[in-house]
Length: 180
Image 1: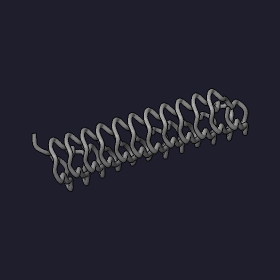
Image 2: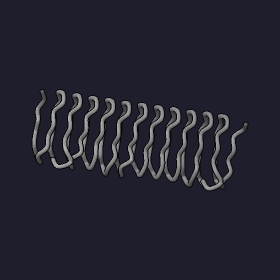
Image 3: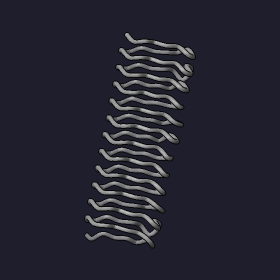
C-alpha cells in the first residue's frame, strides 16, 4: 500500500502505508510505516504505527499517540493529550493539561501540571511531581516524591514531600518524610 495524503497542504515525505486524513489540513508525516495524522496541523516525524491529532506531534518510536497540542518524543505505546508531553519510554500516559513524563515505563501524569521524571508505575496529580522510583503516588496538590518504592502522598496532603525509601506515607498538609 502506498502513502495517502488526503487533505489540502498535507505532506508525506516518504515511508510506507502512511496516511494524512481528509480532515487534516496542513498535517505532515516525515516517513516510517503506518503512521497517521488525523486532524489539522498534526505531525508525525517517523516511526511505526504512530498517530497525531490536532496540533500534536510524535517524533518517532512505535504505536505512540499525541492529541490536542501534545507531544510524544518517541518510545513505545505512549499517550499524551491536552498539551501534555511524554519524552519517551514505554506505556506512559500524560493525560492532564500541561502534564509531563520524561520517560520510564507505565507512568501516569493524570492532572494539571503533574510531572513524572521516570521510573516505573509512578503516578502524579495536580501540580505534583514524582521524580522516579517505582509504584509511587503523589496525589496531593504540589506534592513531591523524590524516589523510592511504594511511597504515597495522600490527596489530603497538599505540599507534602517524601524523599525516598519504601512504603512511606504522608497524609497531612506540608508533611515531610525524609526516607526510610
